[in-house]
Length: 561
Image (tube, rainbow, N blue to C red; front, side, top):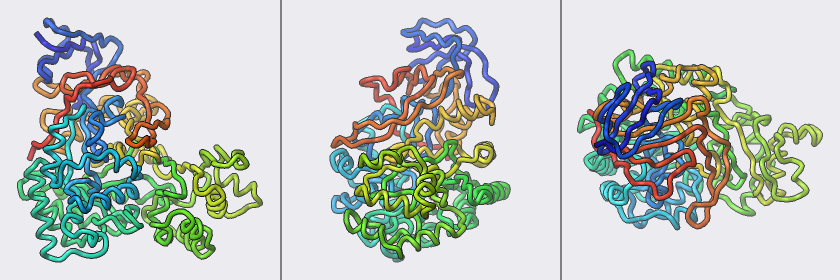
């Protein structure tokens, strides 16, 4: 007797091989048989005729660290075909965390990851202090999908250094204390160690996130501590000043893979991302494993001038960081401030989120009726209409007039589809960067996998469907050391996605208010998804997440060496 039999589906096994029509049988959470016409007594049969079956999507770049403590379903990811999520990316974790540092940790997340402070205060279950206690809590609570967790650099630094973590370099003794925490986290099942050196990553009051203050010596010491047991992935969101040669030296000295984010195409510096990918390819040719995290989605972000994430990485914007209300409006109105921002935007650079492309910034929603005429128009258009005004002045003046409540949207990066297609097919890239769980009011790319299948494989033909499936399943499983997942193979976990290949994709974004304290978030619905199973238990169907979905997901803590 088996639990589930999926009959007559077009089976993409995750290896990249051409699909074939067949049946898949599941028992006790695992795939037990695969064949053209299986004969089994079964509790449930699903007709897969005209549908495609693949392993569940593995999302290697999420920020569900806080949400998972109050939402075991990790909305919206399961309904979008995701059966495994990796949390703790960029080192922005909530564990380890001393009680005295909880408010600072939440305020940092509010700034760097666009999370609602009210939602975090109302929602986070702080039933832990150490990383091991956090993992134990997640194991007790259970989750609808599988989860693997990085130990995060900024949290480790804050545990050891307190408020100084965002202000100065660490001493040798402090680095030694951090190494001990990383070793302990690896012993408790961390998938690796994550950090950030990106200038776009600022925390409370505009101070750099703590990891940005780390010296190369500190970084090397902590990556070395991670690797002592012969396993683990080092994940880094890289600033322009962090050299690929340094990251290669870490891969060479530890023998562990280095995951480099965020490789996105910049229309004003179109070669930069390929220079990074070429350096990654050269490192791999020398036997040193580097992987570049790339996105299959255009980076489009909603924002207000009260929380303008797209420009907060600008050096000229620093005087405005940490200000609010009237003080912020006064700063945004200063001519000296505006001229400094204008000058920086006019200067070429290797990487920057916003690149002076005002024709890609739209007004989404205005707060005052007399400004409603500007909605759904670009800042460039409005500036021209107002006598050829400077676009920066146009945007800032509108926002100030509306008490900083105007909602804008900006298409920032990855808009050149020919270039993005090349990135997706690069042999040393990994399709990632959904950021699910973060920037909840700014954007939502949790459906990245469905977008790869529908837009890039089916519609554009940038890769075969079987290669798109491999990129979402067995490839990240191999990089992360997730044994027994990512393939439709006997003995493997029954993490499965059944979909209509003629329709698969992601729907438009929409805003809902279901966060703790009534907070809002952007979400998107799946298109063409019929069923999602985790460990053989169905967690989503064509209508989305199943109410009271089983917490069949595993907290993953054992990884291939």
